[in-house]
Each structure stands twice: as C-alpha cells, then as structure tokens.
Image 1 (cartoon, helix red, strand yellow):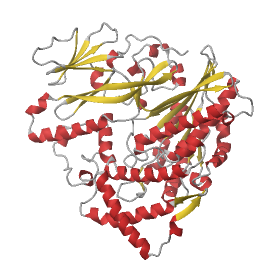
Image 2 (cartoon, rainbow, N blue to C red):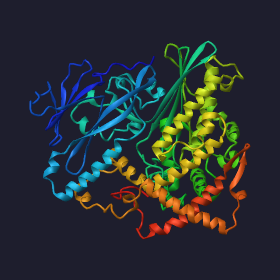
Image 3 (cartoon, rainbow, N blue to C red):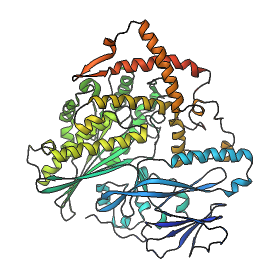
Image 4 (cartoon, rainbow, N blue to C red):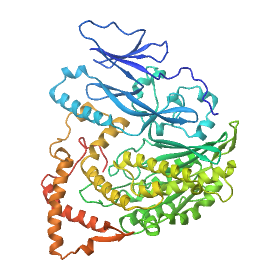
Length: 607
C-alpha cells in the first residue's frame, strides 16, 4: 500500500566511520558495493574513493559504526561534519521502519584552525560550543525508505516522477530539519548519503476492538522556518512564518483501510514578542502593529495553499495581556475571513478553568460542521482513495503547547471515532471511551506527543498533561505543573538564549561571517556566564527567606495558602505566583548591577 517507487539509489543504512589523522572515511557496510566517502580534516574537501586507505602501523584509526550523515556546517576557519551515532527503531510509517536519533556526533574538520590568529581560534571555539549543544537536539526522526516529511495524503498525491527522485529531493523543505546542513553535500551528488531528518514526535499503539486490531500512529513535524525556544521565538516574521508551527498527523490502519487526519498549531500570526527580563511572565509587546493584517494574510494564504480550507481556533484569554493579542488577532482576521477561512475564539481558561476540560465539548459543537465537511484521507484495501481531507484546523494559545495539546487531543479523539464508524468498526453511538484499552492507549499517545513538542520548545513536559493522560486533573498533575512552570522560568532566563543561538546556527538562520564575527560581544558580562541551577536555587532560597518574613509581617496565616482539593491538602497555585513575585522582588536588585540581560552570545537572537 502506497509503496514508494524505487529511486535510482537507496540510502545507506549502516556505515563504518574511520577517523584517520588527516581525513574521515565513511564506508557503507550494509551490503552495498559502493564507493566510500572521504572528508579532509584539513580543509573539509570531499571526494568518493574506491576503498579505505591502508592503516599506518604507528597510528591505528578510531573506528565506529554510524547510521547516517546529517550534514556539514562551515564556521570561521573550520567545517564540521554531523553524523548519527546511535539510533532506535520506534515503529513503522505506512509499512516502512522509522528510526529515532539517540545521539549525534560532531566531527571537526578544523586542522586549519591551528594556523589561525588567537582571536579567530577563540571565536571558532565559541561557535563549536554551540554545535556541541546541538548534539543534544531532541525529537529527531528519519526513515531510509519513505518520505517522513510528507503526510499520507501528500505521499499519495506525489507524482510517479517525483517518487523516483532521491528522498531528500522529495522532502517538504518546511519540515526538513537538516535542509541547510545538507547544502554542502548536495553539490557533490552524494544522494545515497543524504538522509532527510525531521524534528517532532512519533508514537503509535495497537489495541483490540472486539476481534479486530487497530493500529494508530501520531506524528509531529516541526517547521524549521521560525524554529526556536519559547521566549526567544514568538509570533510571526514579516513573511508570515510563525513560531512553534507543528503539523500533527493521526493515522489509523485497520482491516486493510488506511485513514489520515492532519491538524496544525502555530503562534499568533503577527509580529509580537516577550523579552525575558526576570519577571515570571514578561509583557507581551506587539511589534509594528500596523503590519499585523498583512502578515496574518500572508500566513493564511500559505496555509490555504497547502491545506485547503482553514479554521483558526484561538484559545487565548480575552482579558489582560493575552486579551490585547487576541483583540489584535481578531481585528487582523476580519478583512480576510471568507468561504475558505474561518476564525473562532474560545476562551479556554474562562470556559474550562483549570480542571473542567470536559467543557471542550462546547468548542467541538462549534467546529463539528467544519470537521465533517473537510474530512480526512481514506484509502481502501486496494490503496485507492475513497475520501480526502479538504481543510485543516489551526489551533493556537500563547505557547501553542498546553491548552493547544488538550484541544487537539479532543479533536483527534472525535475524528478517530468518525473514522472507525466510516470503516464499519464502530456503531453509530459507539465511542473510544467504551473500550478501556483503546481509551487508555489513546490518552497516553497524545500525552507523549504533547510532552515531546513541549520539551523542544519550552524545555519541559507539557502542562495539563494529566488530563490528556488520565482524562482528569490530579493533585500530582497540578503540583507537577507548578514545578515545570518554575523550570521554564529558569530556562527562559538563563539557558534558552544559547540554545536559540545553536538552533539558528544549525538551521541557517544565522550564517557565520568572518568580517562580522571576529569581534563578538563578550560573554563574561551577562547572567548566563554566571548562572547555573545551583546558583538560581540559592537565590530562590534567599528570596523564600525574605518572602516568609514579609508574609509573617503581613499577618498571613495558613488559611491563605492552603486549600482543599478533592479531600487532599495542596498549595494554592495563586500563592505560588505571589511567592514567585516576592522572590523576584527580593532578588532582582542583585542582578541590576550586571547590566541588561543578554542570553545570546552573539546577539543574533530576536527579542
């Protein structure tokens, strides 16, 4: 079903890396009688060779197995090859094995750096440090046999000629994580080595429905156009590309049928930002307000071109800072809504609060007609298209993480029920919740999906994950949310700037220039140079001491900070926020003498 036509050359699935003193040699070892790839460690020149050079008896080369070549980056004086050192098979996509990258390895081709000036060496080492951070990139997936960047519907619609192309040429550039890194290798016509990699999530399960087995897969594809971290990538750029844009595809396979449903998420599509300033929740700043309608229009034109009709579901609050963004979003949408574009605001927190997420049924009632009209892809036992998806739901909150994931999981649940009824497995009123194993597996699937997307953007697991995972809010889940919120605060202020630099370097959003980068801002004056989690914990402890003293002076009693929740005693979340505010007030003066906070080493992060 939907088999890929054989391309000219298959990708190498296993290779032996030889580390000689003056070159790296990558030798295919998967049964292919192919040429080996040689990369000079002096000047990064690349060539194909017929065999592995003979080893010197004096210096035996280091040898290890690798599973793919991700690409190459050039810095100030040297170039750096990035390969996959470890992988894990995590399932199949339309019958093809899917692998998760467990670890990357950066191989320096930087012998020329030895003859460089001292200042150049220093800058090179600093950029190399960003590449070492990139080695820890999470959520990378690939396949040697099929195009993971395309949904099942796009794969089905791919023309015969396109199916004969190498996988990297079939790939959707938006979702090709190593698109920029492959550019150097493309020039050398190394198709069997060019492995397309996506960032996102991949989970699946099988469950019994009576005597039948259903296979459900959930895939996330993260867009690289405006990739980044939570506080350092917000809103849209002038071209309409938004932060945290993720395509989510839910695939069902059963009784020979294959069905796919796609939905997307992405930041509010105009120029806005939150500049980290040690406050728990920095102010929302709308940038170039007059351009909002144009940027939003460009964003939705692109979505309509790729997905058809679009229903934009906005989950942010109607009041406060979020309310200003929501109002601007509403105003920007008014001139462009029409037959192929709808906008719907649903104040998630006002309607659902922090525990009543079952009230999302009110939202479903408002969008059910769109979902039924625009449908999903359905292929029969012969692989013939019986139905196709004609439109997409685009969901956003502020981060496009927690509220968005809860909402998308609800939509995914409803669509799975529609698909199973269409296939003939479910009766008219039958639901997922009536099958315990299916229900539990589905909740875990979406909870893991949300955690993966959240870790990549915010550094922590998703909030409200207990509802997605268990179907209700729990005391442990609320406390875990409080902990994750504090971790996000620390990462946003002290770590994500450097991580953003590494992302921009890998994705080609920042290209190293000798003339510009030889005089970088000093790293020693900012908070990140001295900040560590122990230091932050120490400062928080000091803040707690002063806060406790302040609370005693203000005659606070335990009645103000303790509430009853389902017969269990827990800390009032509002008290935690008061506590954070007090801690900030107690510690902010300490930082003020350090000057304006700049996380990014080279100042090429936005915000």
